Amino acid sequence: LYYSFVENIIPDQVIDKSIYQPQLDSLTINIPYNTENAQRVKIALYKYGGDDIMSHINVCLLSCDTKAISIAFAYAHLTLLLRKDISNMLSHKAVSDFSFTLQKVLHERHIMTGFIRFQESSHGVLYAKYQPDNDITQLLAPHFLRRLNDIPFIIHDIKRKKIAISNGKSIKIQYTDLPANFNPSQNEKAINELWKKYFRSVNIQERKNTKQQDNYFPRRYRKYCFECWE
Image (tube, rainbow, N blue to C red; front, side, top):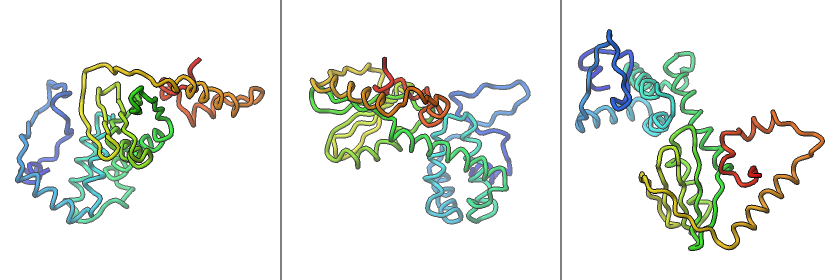
């Protein structure tokens, strides 16, 4: 953003260089990180965009959409250009794209608070693995820190090899290549059976509505939900 304003260049695309695929007719500009310039941009964004703009940009960047960085850039660039809060300017493409991406990430975070299935280990630690579309583990973990009180837990994003570890008081986010070494408690099998019994009891066999069920409980999320296991 700083370089764009100083050099008066608006890029066609902003992308992480680790996934960038060069094109024959493209001009690539590599922007090295500069702490001082980044701080100037952050101060300006807070000044014109309000207290929530940086947290909203960070959430947008958690999207699985490969265009997420470009979408966040366009929104921030317009904020600095107009020098005001643009969050309500939904008729502008940069704002509508940003709002749509933001809401998709937050919606998945919301529904996963109900789809996460913890298992109790023999040591009393709750463990849950899942594969969300977006990188939402750091958004999801604080919800369970509040909900589970002092119970330690681990949330494992299998797809990204990312885990949130909590001792019941704080959360640590880190990456790991190690497979989960999970030993279930003696009660875990009985709890799984209760989930299956509940799932069967709330369904009316004569009035199945699989389409509605798929809308409320997408199939891609069922892999780690005990009640769906045969």
